[in-house]
Image 1 (spheres, rainbow, N blue to C red):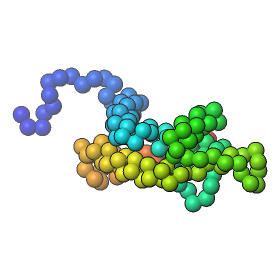
Image 2: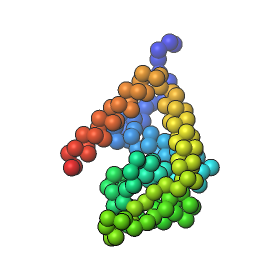
Image 3: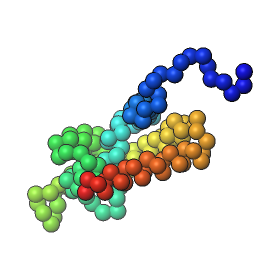
Image 4: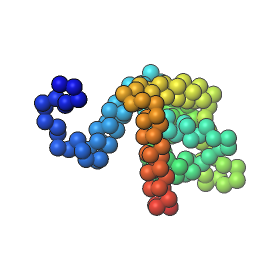
Length: 153
């Protein structure tokens, strides 16, 4: 019959926002890992590279603050990226206690290629939704994230 759902009963949790977010995020994380694997980086490392692509040099602490990660995690992320030749660390000339982190040319190239792969993966992930619905979902999530940042700042 037209318009009727399958006779399989719905999972009671499928109407709960937390359940839906969790499972959508898990699918997105798997797809992201697959898309970024050829570049030897993960989503956290891509986020660091993206933040470092700013027009001016940032300290390790500033990058950690923008990403919302603790200093220990930031050190490990930068160490891994530095080992791959994607970033370089140097002392700040204004404050010798600070480490400035910058993309290397190899890091900038990796960022460009990985960002293209990430965008293509996100388009595939959102493909079951029409363009307007997908754009509305992204805008709604941006509102929730910005609101959360404003509450915690």
